View 1 (cartoon, rainbow, N blue to C red):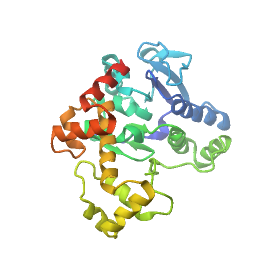
View 2 (view 1 turned 60 degrees about the horizontal axis):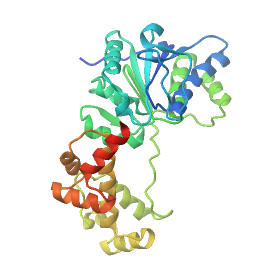
View 3 (view 1 turned 120 degrees about the horizontal axis):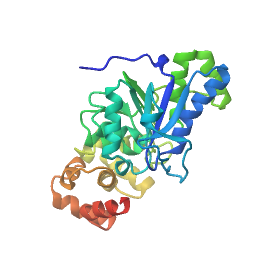
View 4 (view 1 turned 120 degrees about the vertical axis):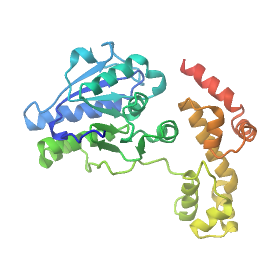
Length: 326
């Protein structure tokens, strides 16, 4: 049975559950929004605590920790707990964390995530049939791993009792939406003014993905690159790409050669192999499945192409990255 919508205006006590290597900028932006709301409103509109499963401060990806840090059990109760992720989130998610998240869910606590913390909620089985957000760098990999979750490329998503957000400064935008719901538009504007933010982005604003390398002003080239990026599992033939953007195949070849120094076929292949490397590093998907997900119909073809591009076969890539993570 689907969870009922929650009144986000009623959320006032937040827990920020920090994982090892979490993004401090994402976490600090969310906390600072609460602090500033209290400051400009003149009342204690929000309360918060930094927590971990056992109360031991987690070390952020920049090497710093937040204190005081409390045990998630001792610091409660919370209206909402955000899982704060960052680098190597897979290694940061263990059985104790998953049990803590499921316990919070059973207690009726709303759950959220910042940056890559969405992975922890998905791994705990708490995002099935939900719409959610995660940092763009992890988006392709996590979509392959959790097909029952609707991963969006929005900045943040509030879907019933799940509040998920991308990284960087996007948590400030999401928390401003909560402030607007609780304290009103004028107070939310005052918070933004204090942070010298000239435009608060909405949840339906898209993440800005890194632009493909085509030169500025080359609309056809940019469209071709985006079309290729959107068709990784079932690669398009070059005539299909050219037809879709309204130019001839010869023109397509000339554009890629002139501005990128490569052929469209080689650019497409490199795009697929880069996606494969992302999946090898960020998921536990079998190597064979990764090859299929990136448009390679045989393991031999995938292995040969990958080794030619990166100097080592896919299985070696997986082993090397697993060793570094350990």
